[in-house]
Length: 226
Length: 299
Image 1 (cartoon, each protein chain N blue to C red):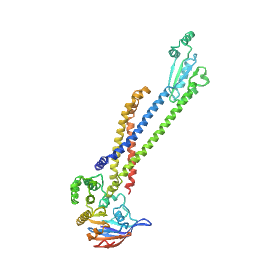
Image 2: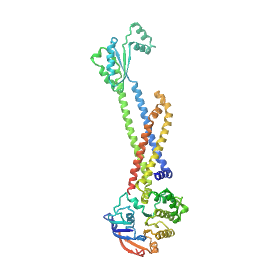
Image 3: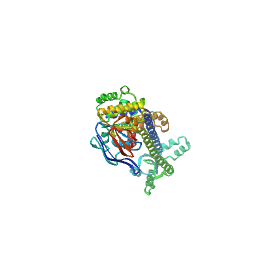
Image 4: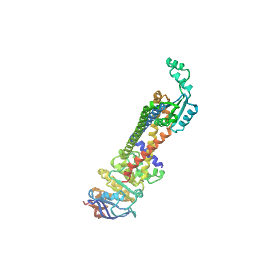
């Protein structure tokens, strides 16, 4: 599903994001990428969603080489990957339902289909009763659930979660992780970038550890070891 | 397209304070430009009134024959600079003279004593521009006309004409500079207003890109918003201008002895003013938002 071959990202001579990273993630896997701040976790996410281009190496997503993706194809790629972030990245002037619908609208989905799908997805994340609220009227956990609903609404094969629990308390963190596990059970490949030890240890799934831009361990059922 | 229009209208309503400020700035800029238009109309009218009051009179000798006078008239009319020439024969000149001095019995008595009409015919010439008088007078100051032209008023009024020419040229030049300055200030203010408006929405632009929106899907609503802001600001500023001119016209009429001077100008040029202002504002807002957005779209 995701293949990184000899992937490197160099910002400048003394600032290197990733060094010769090789990683293969099978469809349906739940992989946690861990590491301290500045070890290249976010750089990896940025390369996967084509926010940045690698300095060297190959990135393949579903067999599509996106190493040198054109500006024209970037929106197409992003419509096939669900992404959630630590700061939720919701459109503040749109309601919960509009935020979720937006992901379908940009892809040109028919209006009647959007009207059907959006409440269904919001129901999955437990926010059907708040579809007319604006993001500032929701708690952090609820905002993250909206972001998850938005990332899922176009049924992506991959969900990339960059520190999704970074701004949440332990209860909300648990809720979000449970939702991610449920999504994974439906067959979606999940790449979770985190430095939350409890989350990683609780998951008992594959753990890839980054240090100084390199993969220093890759365990099938791993623990947070830093 | 429907979605882009929907997003644009949503943005306008949900960012009401920002929309209001943008339209307000556009209106203020348009009012400045419109004020300049009014000042130019008044300046032009003032210059025209002053120019209109200038003419040059050619006084023919009493003994000049009709053929000789006709020759001079034909010669003068042939100049493209001459806008109008009015000929007064001896009788008309005498009648005007008497009317002018009808209170002065001494002059009228002297005239009666002379018996014959001592005044020769007069040719009054108006040129398109005050500077052209000198050329006409020079052309008539040749030996062959010396014995039939008794006097020309140009000599007496030359300084006044030169002065008016300098003033009108300076006023015109000043108004061009003022127009250019206003246009530049308007451009800078509108450009920065739009830039600030886009800057406040840079995070939203970034999020839209992350969700998979194409550049045109993001740009589209801003283009529609620019169109709406242009229409609203031009219409409001036009109505303000319309009612301001209605209010000013009676006061202007006292000075220029012409009713509805400003309103007439506005009605005569309504499509030019509205059209040019609309397309200028639209172009400026689209250009500003495009340039401001480019840096966020490229990230």
